[in-house]
Image (tube, rainbow, N blue to C red; front, top):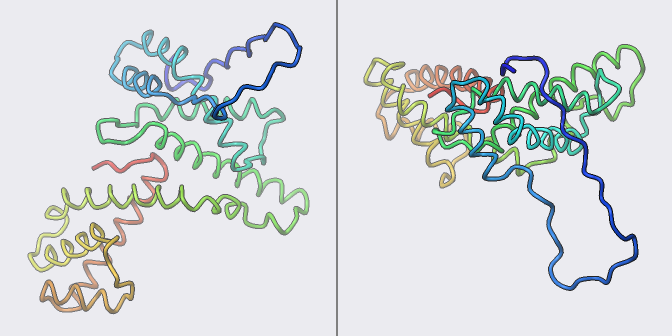
Length: 258
């Protein structure tokens, strides 16, 4: 099985539970937590998969140690964010499509950059489902008059603010790292470099900043760089253009190619 194949093996059937159905006495102690499906072994298996150049070995690792975590991740994403506008009648088929997509993205994951597998594949899977869900929503809307509450389906997922904050923080950290490597390649003039470096420094120290007004930030940058406002404006436009491009890359792959 190639990692570019359209299909991946479906999960094995749930085991049949046998034994007495008589009520058992309640046990005291802490309530048991849900069993984790994305474990340290999953992380290790993904690293072994990426390190291997033998396709048969890769297939074996995926089938035995990665497929089930991907299956449960797809299932949780679908039900947590209610991605129910589908082209298929059975959600098992949608889960299978997500697993195939995650399989295609396996080689894009770079554990050596410090990224966490669960976070990366959650972002990649969710973004795939958002696009999939919204496209199917538009198709269905052309056929039937859906309730106004669903006018903008993406707002249904914005409630998870903490996850979005973590996602944005990860992106900004990568954005700063990107400019620390490429700043002097993109900006050739010394004045431009000073401005870009000052802006990147602000991104790096964003949690300690008490200035949020655009005009105040311009004044602050001008004071620490001693350059004119037109230069600051020119540099910030370039930074903004890169920001949009890198954000699109991050949303698609879960990381930035530094």
